[in-house]
Length: 208
Image 1 (cartoon, rainbow, N blue to C red):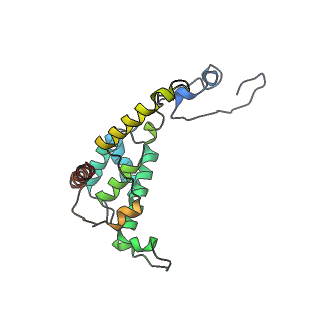
Image 2 (image 1 turned 90 degrees about the vertical axis):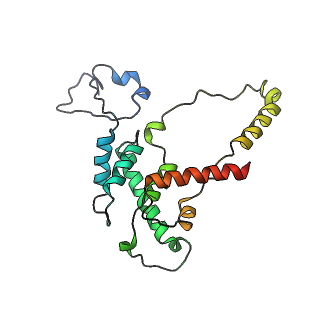
Image 3 (image 1 turned 135 degrees about the vertical axis):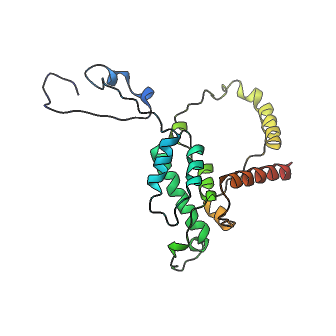
């Protein structure tokens, strides 16, 4: 990128979502000395991106579902939204034809019966971590070797108490979700969020 010899009409362009991690030597004059910042899409832009990645879906997503999805995906980039739509479509296939994942026989899928519902997006939202949240670093560090034996028993007791008060959520696969999928087409995001909250509360009561 730098040197005594001319390179002709050559322009080097780079892109990153972690500018803080780029070596400062690459950002000095003569190298990547022009920087353009492109923020994450706002709600209007996310709505447009969802339109693009759901074009051609039959039956099409309702505008209300797209509006709610755009509002719920703050911090999602274009690639995140594309992956979200893809995962939701796969969840719809699993929910409509769960037998294809448990049978060794070749089964023909009638794609006209597949409809992507709000529940399919909720399953994907629950499992996805947008790229904007993956770059966060933790300030925690392990205890020193000379201190850890002194606090080991106390930490174990605290961990048990916290597990009783806030039991860890059991992670289910998309296939497990699909096997108990009622495919309620009238269930929008509001109903799915209320159903998920009630289910989490019930599990806490059972564990306690």
